[in-house]
Length: 172
Image 1 (spheres, rainbow, N blue to C red):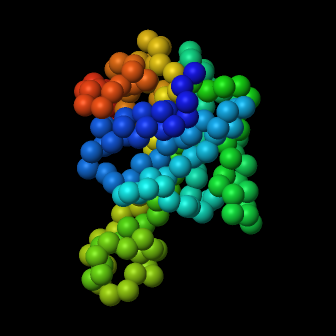
Image 2 (image 1 turned 90 degrees about the horizontal axis):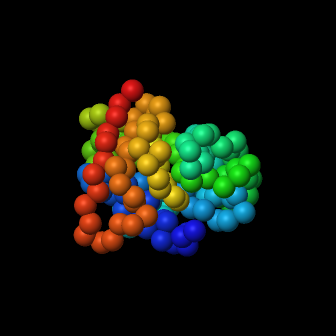
């Protein structure tokens, strides 16, 4: 088993390689004992977020069978939401709501598009989907059936800085 910091780096590298034009990523850190934490990376570091922004997390075992996964939101506390699984996951998929991004007089701002001051030149709802691999095997080449999915075509746990990663991108 790899250390969680190495896994975070691999998940982040995978996310950055497969979505180079995006500055924001969502990944899931393995805390051990079937506990995980979803982290949101924006620009140059991890950002705190509101519990309701975490929409869904699903775990899968090494055969890509779904692992029963739940979220303890920790509302009313400063603690980040905790993700709990019945058994160890080989792969986690997280869905995160990054809110509305409104192109306004002040540039892009994160707020409800109705509340943006000045002129609204356009708004997008930003939903982030992150896939974090903790293990890799040939079965992980199969799609999970997500609406949008990026599948690593080789073992992401063996990537080194400067390596290329072939991926398969699927929609619906």
